[in-house]
Length: 250
Image 1 (tube, rainbow, N blue to C red):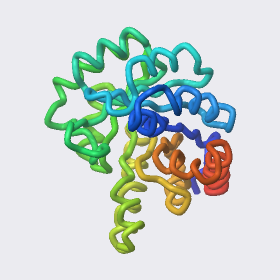
Image 2 (cartoon, helix red, strand yellow):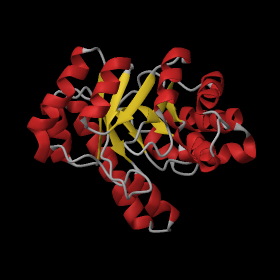
Image 3 (cartoon, one colour):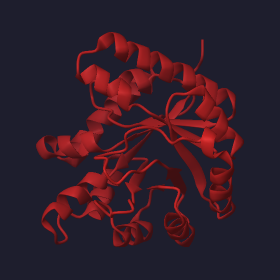
Image 4 (cartoon, one colour):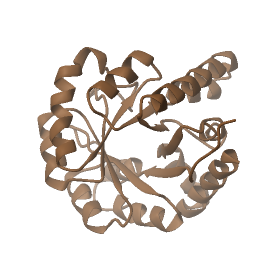
């Protein structure tokens, strides 16, 4: 039987605090304040996605996060020269390369790595040289995971959205199939020496099966926690997620 090693980390994505702020303009609610509250509530890291269109997180948020955070920042970004330049200026603990389309509401799938190996290998090399830990946001697909390892990524983050959507919509056979693939690909990525993270769409009723995968060392959760904080407060919302994650590991 595989033994669980170490505590499962929780990264809290604060993008949608910024979405709420930007809906009306001004400076409130402040995503950096949310990040600091998340730290106090037990978050092991903070995730923020600086999109090309700046629809939620903006450049000054990244500046302030780098200045004020005591836990690591996971800087989500598209593979563009502009974002590479920003990442190299800040040198965050981690950068997560994600696909990005202007017309999407949220990230719809994993990055296409296999068809872009040479381009992506060249793109991430300076980030690694600068000391950033490079993660690739990717579907539970053996071909893409193998390509991520070949280009020099240290981490993959498995996209859990299809699993969560199938659960929410009552498509339980599909949900179970998606979960089985996530489990299999977690083990495969680990066998290649990749650190395995997971995230997208996870909520209280979907987190435990993924948290139980022994190869997964970090979950990144944002939209659900920010939504739940309207009712519980951010600290209690994070504390309950932390409780469910810890229970799943034992």
